[in-house]
Image (cartoon, rainbow, N blue to C red; front, top):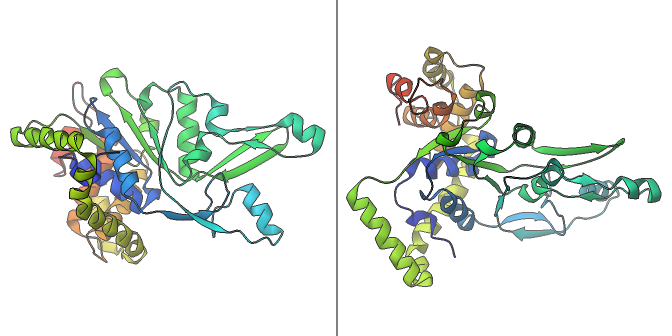
Length: 334
């Protein structure tokens, strides 16, 4: 059993970054920077446990959505006029091992079988397992660059296509990418950093009362996990309902010219490369507004979104925490 998500003490930026990506997966995932033992993987697994089941096509290895983003196999059945039955599945966390190969990541086509028998057989990879799930990449900065490129390309496009010897197979690859790294062990290239939607800094809690509360909750959880989970069930149900409501409200959250100008007013003085930061801030602000029950994007939501979206996109001075001083100068410090 996993510690309930709502029972995690502190780490508010981490929890918010994960929640808004569930509300709007097109935000582009979250990069978690900091030391070990700060509830990074616990938070991801706990959120997956909290979320309600979703509808998927029964028997599909990729858990295709019944109305969009079908894999090649489901699309072929649909083209034949077959009726695809549905089932309910739970969201889960798929981990990417450090030494993963390209074939293990994207999957492989059995060329010999295709040539001899005329059958297109695809061996699914990790991206297939990750579709409509969390994909958790610990120490993403230690992965080979071409693996990170493949990972981020699939996350951006939402589709994984494998082509070998003129034979191709594609399947949806819409997942919430969560990467972790300790900056002391090496950085990601700026081009790769920019591809993560949000970033959060996590560290040990320094407030004495909060540290005591961490120990109290962990001791209670270890003593009787069922009783502890029951104690927090009401909070869990409340947050799950808020997330579902926010997902439904999101399409109705209005963006006006004043909102767009407010986003650009924050980013222009920072001399950022490209426009991805602006787009991510806007998407995150809409998701936060939906979470807060608003149908228009608020000023507070824009600033909170900017704080999550800009830290890893700012050039650092020596010994500076990711863009910290420039965020402070812009009035959006962490």
